[in-house]
Image (cartoon, rainbow, N blue to C red):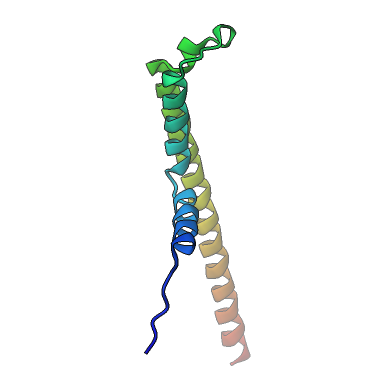
Amino acid sequence: MGHATLDASCLFEFNGVFLHRHPLFPLLSLVSKKCELATNSVVDVAADHASVCSVESFDDDLRAFAIQVIITIVIFVIIITTIIIIAARSDLQFIRLCLSNN
């Protein structure tokens, strides 16, 4: 009996999609870019390289990421709560309709 096998390119593509959909991927990407900037041997003097790679800048980026995560969670909770309220009201209306027909 033959088993389906994944070739290397298919597995690599799956891992890439899986990685990019991970909720912490934006943070990983940001850290990677910061590291690249910090270790870059060619520094553009006009670009204020020191402030981009500072600990304070990194802290600001982490804070902004955390705020974005919190906002996303709050929006999700609001949407789910709204759906639950609408479903509960619909159920009550259905029950009232059934009781009034009897």
